Image (cartoon, rainbow, N blue to C red):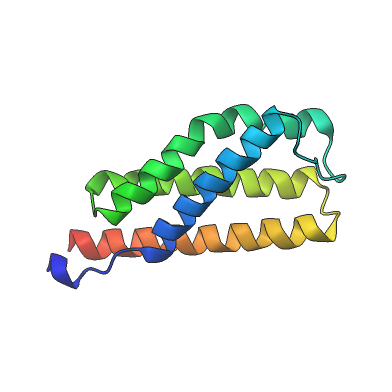
Length: 129
């Protein structure tokens, strides 16, 4: 039955890219080279850096474990997906739904993440049968 289970490729690719992007963004923000979008208040935006430092390794480990079909990858995938959903909704709310670039990119990221989480749930349910 396990041979019939397809890997959750959208989630694998998404969490890998998201982890690398977050590592880049946090390092740029830490050095002061990241331009904060004008729609965001400064202090609230900086408050995201510290949780991101914790979640970056989680995103990357999730991607690897999902690739290896390890059972922990599915659990961490749900946690990682929840973290990204939280951040995207937080950023959308923080922007006050202003700034077309913010709305477009945050909405795209939120959509891809929801597809990834749905794929993980679907693959997990198939795997458990």
